[in-house]
Length: 265
Image 1 (cartoon, rainbow, N blue to C red):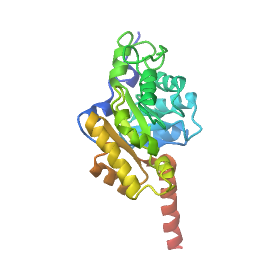
Image 2 (image 1 turned 120 degrees about the vertical axis):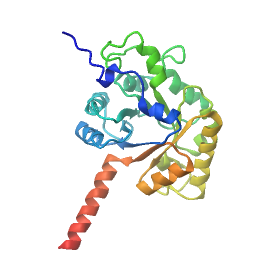
Image 3 (image 1 turned 90 degrees about the vertical axis):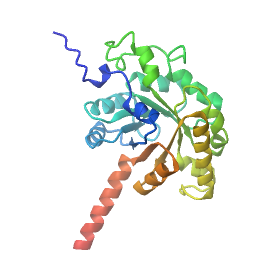
């Protein structure tokens, strides 16, 4: 007997993180740069709101993405992906693989933001191609899947340059973009202060992104490389906050452990 269990995430419509953000709450998650399904599963057992497979800054390919998303099954962590570039086939492949959110790097204009929406959403909102094998629960949710996917998807445009900051208002005005996410590392580098994610220039840029999001009712997001910074960004009004990445957590934990061992010997 075929048992289409409603408990399997592929058989359920909706996106709890999008619902949480729409309700005005703040959501914390983690970037995954190890390209490891084992690490993804380990992180998911600890319950962050979301885990984002970083396909720009890691060796992860589409097969790896699927394995990492599968590793999150049964957890409360929602799986998302950052694609390497603003290209239709990369965005479509990430979503067809089952990611409930897609982050696109280096969006610098309304036209580029519209290209994201065009690739990420099915008609009539966009022109996403039809290849819903895994993402529809292996066809179990057809034909309702197409409208449900548009409603549940979290579409994230990264703001990573001075040009993007200047265009933040027009990017935020694009229908279908849900989040403007500040990529602090690249933005700091573009502002001439590589490795320094604080200071007056960064504060002004963040304020401009926050203002654009408030004006157009979009969610402001940002990457924080430590807990204190994440808490500061939350107080400023950012609501989709990455608390570092898996490698960073391993490094900090190992450094602390080795330091403690050195002190005791």
